[in-house]
Image 1 (cartoon, rainbow, N blue to C red):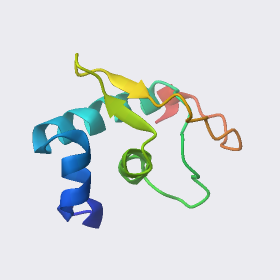
Image 2: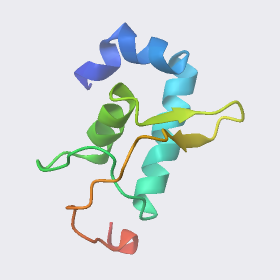
Image 3: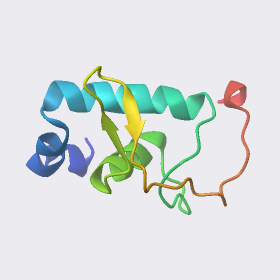
Image 4: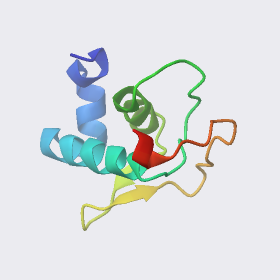
Length: 88
């Protein structure tokens, strides 16, 4: 289990375990569909770790309709390779 998920900080940040699970799932789908990563992905981090970092760095959140929103000040990291999501 990822250590970040054990911390109450990330659970409280999104409003509970159910919302955290929803946010992670929806963001991973977005990444698989080609959305740009909002944090430095220089290491070989998996998508789960990238999403957790985006949450901890306040780059993404769930709106009142439980849709993933990107913070206005979050800019995509542009030095990531272009990968066809169909190849994943």
